[in-house]
Image (cartoon, rainbow, N blue to C red):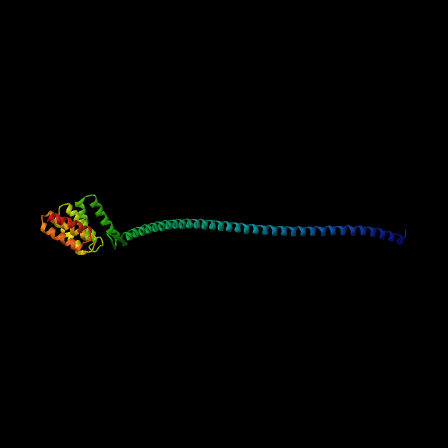
Length: 262
């Protein structure tokens, strides 16, 4: 066979082989290229996963720190709340104590005020009308006079004499003095202290000769004189009574006595 006939056949065969080899080499290169890309992708993925894990760990640590800080803050807040509760309880107790003390002080002040008002009311002068005479007297002297008069009305003349004597000495300027002298004289007459009785009846007349009790005091003096067997003195006293107080009931009684003494 000639070379010219052989060469095209050989070339055709080698071309086929070359194409097959080339195709095989390209497939290997493609496979190798794909493996490198996959490895790179895996590495990238691993790096991303590692970064994510690192970020997650940092986030967890930060969260733990925040939780720890928050827990500490909660504990501090709880302690502050407990301290505030204790302070409020103390303030409430102090407030209640202050209110109790204030209430007690107010009660004491009220009691003191009432006591002072009662004391002042006893000392406060009042207008009195007695035996046709109007005058101002303290409640204390009114009470003392009425107490002495109550004893006299019980016919306890000895004690009445003591009380009226004490009254006259304690209230020499009182409007009750003239009536007190009258009842004192009568108490002394009842206990047969005629001289003492005459002295107080005369003191009454000297103090207020126009008093409604004055005519009776003069008549009482005459009675004391008669008890002392001083008829002459009694007649003069009765005569003076009729002249000084002619319109009085005591003057009528004096005229009757004068008739019996003649």
